[in-house]
Image 1: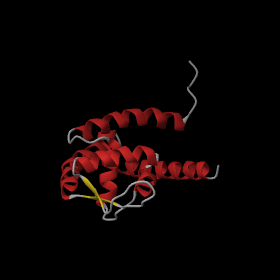
Image 2 (image 1 turned 45 degrees about the horizontal axis):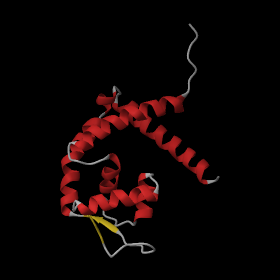
Image 3 (image 1 turned 45 degrees about the vertical axis):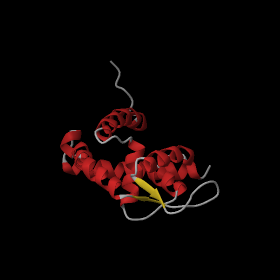
Image 4 (image 1 turned 90 degrees about the vertical axis):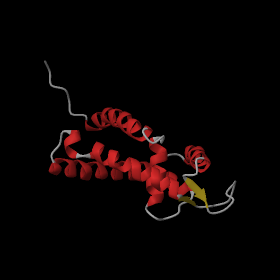
Length: 146
């Protein structure tokens, strides 16, 4: 039987589906989607961001983020620093309720990311993280120059 060719990006894409399912289950325990978690985690770093900035940070389209922001605002997990709306650059910030939800889910996120949970040693997990960041940075830069 012929050996399968090494197609690392294809493997990465296939793996991403499995990882996305796992994260979806983790975040669902606190009623969040992966994108909502990304918003809360990004805002928890202490910097208020507008929707365009948040979209870049969590790598989603700004239009997609608009609906997510509204849902988080309606739940009281995020608030705007101004009226917002078309053409206005209001910033978003995490609320105490949003921080509480984030704090509740972070241990499960850490457990899901634990090297042993992935079948890796600490050293291999660190190497994988470095390699994934390199691939993401390289491919992102290539797409930005188009």
